[in-house]
Each structure stands twice: as C-alpha cells, then as structure tokens.
Amino acid sequence: MRVVLGSDHAGFDLKEACRVHLLGQGKIEVKDAGVFNRDSADYPPIAHEVSRAVSEGEARFGILICGTGLGMSMVANRHRGVRAALCHELFTTRMSRLHNDANVLVMGGRVIGVGLALEMVDLFLATPFEGGRHTKRIAQFE
Image (cartoon, rainbow, N blue to C red):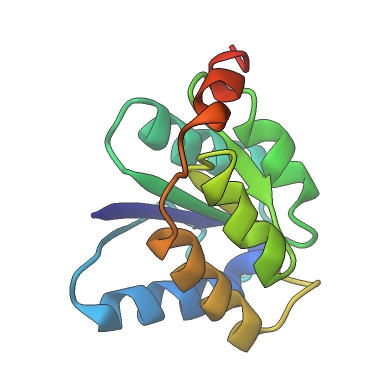
C-alpha cells in the first residue's frame, strides 16, 4: 500500500510522527510531499500535490495535516475522486472509511496530539469500505 503525506508548517511535527510511524510498520510505502521544515508555508500547494497523487492513482491513501485541518480538507475535496475527511477522533475516522470510502485523512496539528493521531492513521488505513447502500451514495458525489 502506498500512502502520500503532506503538511504545512503547523502540521510538520505531526506529519513527521506519522511518517516515522508508518515507515516503522515496514509494510507501507510512504511518499512525503512536504513540507520539510517548520518554516512558514502555504498549505494549498501541498494539499493539491497529495490530492493529485490520490486522484491519479499514484497512492491509495493520502494524509494531510495543517493547523486545524480545515484548509487542507477544503483544497483536497476539490479534486475529482478525492474524498477527504477531516477527523479529530476515532469515531469519525472509522466512519469516514466505512460509509464514505474516504481516501484522504485530514487532521489538525494544533487540535490533536500525536498518540491519538497515530491511532487514527492506523484505524483509517485498516478500516475497509462497507459498500452496499453507501456505494450508491458515493456515486452521487461527482
């Protein structure tokens, strides 16, 4: 499985924790779309890069992190085929996959801590899409 990660400066530390965590599992290929330091950076170019990779099938999943997650989620959901879910806890993380087949997890680096974020990443990647009645609804997104 290939996952592409991206953040702005406000999400950099949490993105790095997620990157190290995923690489440590040894079964996930991780692409880091930046940023690569804490210097002030605009979030739209990173969100576009991660979303493009998911939209074009270069990665199965994306993870985006900015200060609140709001800006990243707004940009990501402009891409065809991207279903970005802004989550701050485990229930919505799980439901975003089960019912919405979300393919981009968005988190707020100033909203949640590292421990919860890593649990959310693992849950997001492990939870399958339930299909059934939800498939028809997702088809109506576009």
